Length: 621
Ligand code: ADP
Ligand code: MG
Image 1: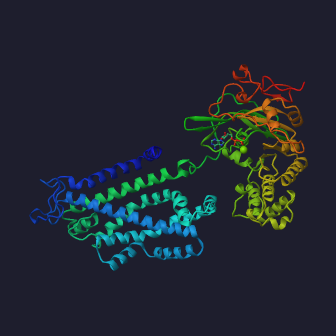
Image 2 (image 1 turned 180 degrees about the vertical axis):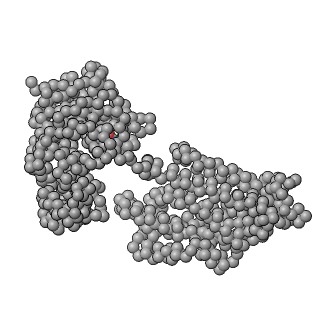
Image 3 (image 1 turned 135 degrees about the vertical axis):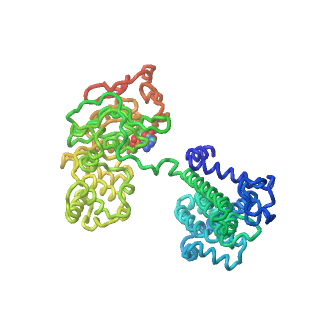
């Protein structure tokens, strides 16, 4: 709650609205206790007294009634009617929306067509018709205003409910034997309540205005009872000669509606979880770079990651996701990166092309060199030209990287045409060719499939085809086979292996599966807590792991046909990235750790090919 208030008042305008409306509410609630004149007593001798006249702070109206008193009582009535109408509309409309959305099918159809019919009428005309039928009076105006707003709530809430009704937690409630009413009240309602509150807070102002409108036309409150609309209506004829009689209620309507709307906007923003997490603020086109220290000199590798540091700055905390990683690949080489989930593999990969979301991501040091050219400081246009063209990515979940509404062929063609000047027909032919390359049977037909029409393995092949589309020099594959079953995984791996041999492609292959590394990679780097703890030729690292972490990671892998044995989990948890211990990050979980391990930075050392960041490495010799 206090977080909500803090968020609300960070929005200055909403805070101002809250203060104004609170002051008005305080005034009108205490109005009967204040030493005011009776609002309905006429005194024709005192007609049209100016503001600040003796005994009448705001003057008097055409019947000599005290304007201040009428204003406070009238405001009280207007707000009460507006809020009551909003509550009624919200309750009825939300109930209709939830029932329609939850049951769906025919119920939904019948109910929502009725709602649509109501919506087809112009708003204020419908309200007028209702009051005309019921007869003038404040109560009937309230009913009319509530009625014309029911469809608004019904539509909004139905939309939200439809999205929720198909979710697993509703199915689970059903399977647990809950009745419909209980599911709607205990499972659905808490989830749609914020939406109802938001819809209400943004419409209360409207409803007050509509009620005032009806009263202005003489259809709402009846004389002598004052509300803001009727005060305006009665003052209309004296607008030129005695403007204060209409300015006073007019100003009040303005203040109320304005402050409620500002407050409503603030409430909406503060309650919306997406706005709150900042997900709707668009990330920058490239990762923010704020490098400290020297930029490492160029090397002659195809792609070299040099002492790369990527952090996430969230609030006052700095999460060091990648803390000084150096890696390099040559053409035709496959480099594996392996490590527990959360060790920084994906962030390393995304940093290469400036794809880490900023905010909160910041590159704070190091360089990424492609053919010697530093990509970290490069302008957006340089990166854009290389993204998907010279360096391409394959991600874990093709269903979330492919656009669900376009045919795969069209998406492939788009990839090609955004970097090369090809006609549509040529691009399509190339797309078919690519699907053939990644061994999709019947490519001429499959090219017109939508992503959902393909199996997981097929989709991942499309993902690889897309990465291959512009014949890149490097492919960075981030766990491309993790979501697939082993047979499909094996096919995809051999496909990547073939492509690498045929085209001299360099591959950086990220995984947490040693079997995959053994099958595909020439070299492997083991990551832990944002740093590389061991690097070397695959067979050397797998056969004689030197870092205790690598050794225990390999020991965690169950062996097929190896008989029953106790699986060795690594005790302890991965470290928290905003509070890394000095020295070896693995020391708290390591059974060989000594005091010296916890002191200072430990260098990556050992024979040139097989290096390890450990003071007491496990060495066979
Ligand atoms: P993995 O090795 O499993 O690919 P990642 O590279 O995705 O791990 O993540 C490394 C660390 O960075 C994790 O601790 C993760 O919580 C953190 N991280 C990743 N993306 C973000 C982000 N957008 N905001 C904050 N922290 C992030
Ligand atoms: Mg990852």
